[in-house]
Length: 377
Image (cartoon, rainbow, N blue to C red; front, side, top):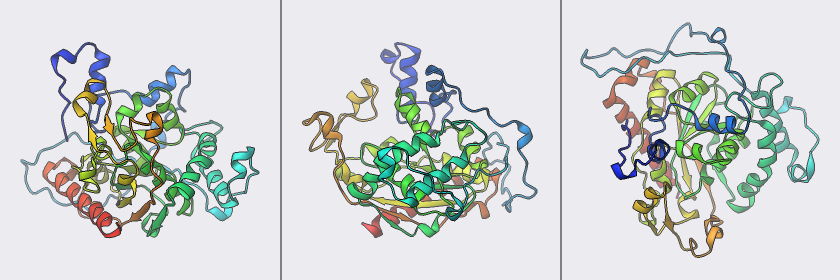
């Protein structure tokens, strides 16, 4: 796990500026920022998240997965993270969801199946609240879905392979390769998971902290189910029995140039630690198409850092066409799900403190994702 990003002395003009550099391309599980930018954004808008469940709702499991003996007392240790379980947030089977009447012309562009799947997501919000404690609002994703579903069907023409490897219930971590300058790959994965699971499942994308600092964008991300990557958020969602979608390459994956197309960058390892601590499987995902949607010819990285941006690219269309140059090319997407990696069946929660083991397992996941990409290009 990387430490705090070092900022040159002449760039430490203010605490806010320093935090911007720390958040930029950082490991989502660093302790550099203690607050959740999504929740800060909600507060600025005068909104408050739904209350966090009290401790009485949490229950410890009667039995944990088999634990591998610790071979040496000299093994590096990390602070223990309590493994919590509670009643899983879930959606009903598609056949049991009542078909709602379409609201507005956008919803009328959707078929009965899509409307049923969106209606199923309302069960993820408990009580009478409009959104859950992370800011997810079913009404917002219902309004945004027609636009992204149009991209899914008509622009990217997504082909899904082996979705049967997605778990039908319970927590899991979906790990994919990242690319494409703008996160359309994450959006296509979220829709693909929703369209190929029964009961319908919402993949909660763990996003970089830099995205949480963007006004309005951060609130929209929260409303459609995306969550800033902190240890607390990660563990809380897994305890909820939800699917988490992570891109361990982080910003390094999005700013790959054409010479590095489909070559996975170094994986950050926080997701491995959480998978071991929470005893959940990891599903590798190969995404083909994202690296072709906005090919980066050159990245002015030093200038981007000075401006507080993750990337300052030159593409065949940007900056020559202005903002239109950021529109992704209509490339065909292919999303391939690999067989689950059940590391938690061999290693126990205390093994999350073994840095060598965690690095080794992260490399195994990276290799599995790279194989999926190479075999399906």
